[in-house]
Image (cartoon, rainbow, N blue to C red):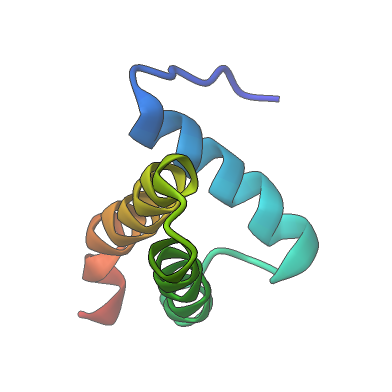
Length: 78
């Protein structure tokens, strides 16, 4: 197992994203990340509709972690 450097909430969310995707969605490809992003955006919307500020912050971090990972893998399209 490789060592993980977790500097902030986004790194932690990214690490959790990798762990969740391997078991739930399969390998973390851009296509998979697009599906995961839509799920996270739906969870952001639900938190807004339910006036759940704490969950909204968590879901925004999760969505941002997915977007960050997509950005990091954007060269895969080239």
